[in-house]
Length: 209
Image 1 (cartoon, rainbow, N blue to C red):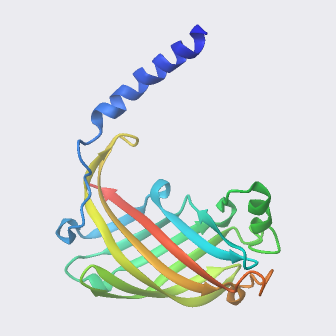
Image 2: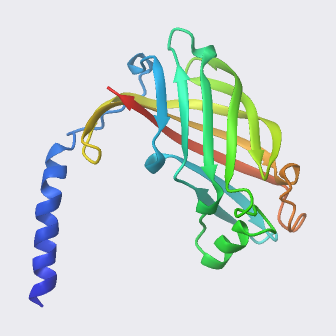
């Protein structure tokens, strides 16, 4: 009985320095004036692509892609010149069911062994206030098609990251779009599972302060 208590105490002592360095309030805010120019890298721990699909007319099921990498280059004085490049590891797809995860990774759907990464590259950005329309090319299973993202600014600010032990500037956005999966060679189950797939993209970018 003593061992779990000892482990809990040790774990608490290890966590104390991290907790002590955490800010007293959220360092980010929906204030565009906080955004500074430069090239930011996607934070893989806080960046996700989510999908939502109707299953056989009975229910919706949802899934996520994570561990995403990429860059954002922007200048608040010339926001329409921003450029975004994102890579999504397909093998990281998760739902709430392991067998479904494996099926999605397989040849019926994404064929992750052959096509391990999906890629998005922006071609234009049109900014209006805190919203933007981002046009670009999406590549899935080696097939590239144009897509348009409706994005909005979430927040920006500076913070000390207790995990990386470094100061950074952060900026976050959320975007939505709908793609036809058949355009990318992912046609299994249509029309029992719809062709149109809504996507929600939440991206946190950071750069050294």
